[in-house]
Image (cartoon, rainbow, N blue to C red; front, side, top):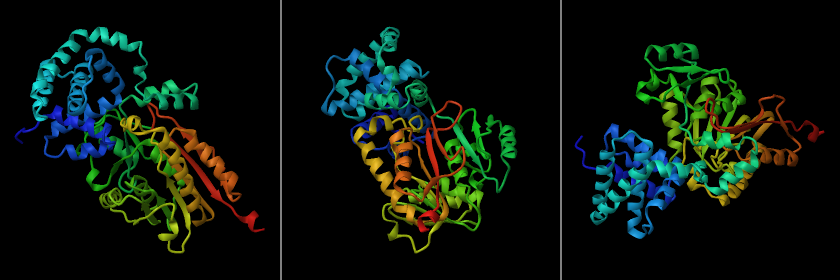
Length: 432
């Protein structure tokens, strides 16, 4: 492939699209990676994710180096300088390459007159890096979270908040889910060893393996044959709590992209599974995942608040309800969440979550099980939602299981931040 692009300018544009246009980093990167080499795709991902993990620190560095902020059409140069500083501070890329490629990025934006400014700022940062680093260590920017979210986490977890913040700022571990229809977890663990991929088993999930270092999908034995799926440990535990059985009628609501749908069917291949999601684009991924794993589920585009529009007069034995949430438990996987999410979003999500839960509850059979889950660590989306729901619904009970009601916090050695609660419907006393 002939290189006819400047990767640093692409990265600066990614920052602009996320910060200024409020687009998801994952979505932006998927488009920006088109027509660039595989090696540069990896570097673009590393730079972009790293920048959003450490954005307050990078912005603070720039404030120390530039007296007059760059505004208007020059704002893209501000982002280009962020890309340069990140490389100089966090990567092993040779400084001469950093300066050359970053400065040349200005040409792409037709702002060649600012090349000297970029070069000057980056060279100044090189000279002052140690001094600035020491000053930064005494600055609250080292928490790398917006103030409102940091305060909310501190209030919710007064004794654990530092551990949560630390975990949020790390690169996430890569977890696999072994398809037992092809291999046992231990057998696949051995296959990984034989292929030179180091990994660990865990006692917390029967199908999970954690890689010591993330690797490319193409290096995973049997991935295209459906032998293994990439899925975080906490997400796997959620489906295991649902405990699906063959021949049951099971609803996976808010199902995209389908990781939990496919796990339901791996556990219970003869279950009748209905996967529903409101997002017409993301729902296509459910079918892609089913095809790779050679599994079948009925897929419907539908609004969880209006199940009467898509449910055909049949109640469910089990319902997995993974509601839309703040995603504050998976910040290490999606660091742009810190900068996209706002306090008002939490209020709207809490209302939406309760509406969906209340709307779907009538369609659960008596003695049926509903697992409510989020990838959030905020109590008002989790524990408080379930407490409110149970108090308002006399036929709703927590399952008699120590694992049925659990808040998982992000961990260096474990899974992502996650919450789940297993509810049983029992309306016998109401009927009597």
